[in-house]
Image (cartoon, rainbow, N blue to C red; front, side, top):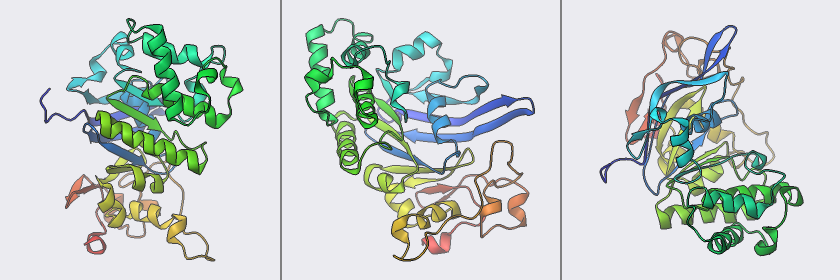
Length: 328
């Protein structure tokens, strides 16, 4: 691995779910690059494939789902070529994931301290237990949990939902991983704690050169947190580029629609804007551009073939009728 090698490089990732009617693509040709210390925001409506993409990167897709194509290069190694033992050595140590539901991380029959120390000692068995416990105390304090020393001796059911999520975030940060995949981890937190967590995440990335993929539907969070943003629709990345440029001058009509749907883009007293129609289901996708049924700029050409990736400035996009003039 050379200094110029990206920490994570994803090529042509495809994840399918097998049904009686055939295999349906939930992730269709996703390509991403994340460098050390960089935060990538992965945004889109519910059902766009964001979470499935995150799960696919870590090999956490269960039947009837399956990653059927693509490469996931982490520090130059293809994760898809590793066996389960090789993946377990990376998960929770060099790559961590924060799930939207903290109960996917926390075991209800074990005390919080036991689970946090296990996350350290499994990957670093020579760490003295006293030192490991102190790291757990510091991690809980970082995410805003009061009296962290005593909290280690409590069970998950003694924490509120938001507190459990903070514990899950603390566990992900314990081993100072190279990459964190965060699947809407602050959804259950109040605004004050959310701001604190976002600050801690940014600090971690800057100080330890940790890379992060932040999966969310909240463009406001991405504007504050991310360096790059990838907009996902129906399993595909439809626009990607520096967050300041994409949010200020979107090229894809879907990105423009998401921005116009934000409350801040609506004049007080008027109804919130929305994108007409509904996102397609796995089985309800048409040929051509998947956004065509909802796009105000769609033409006959859009129904004949799917647009390939094109480039405008530093922004990549998939569209036959981009907002180039509006973005210039």
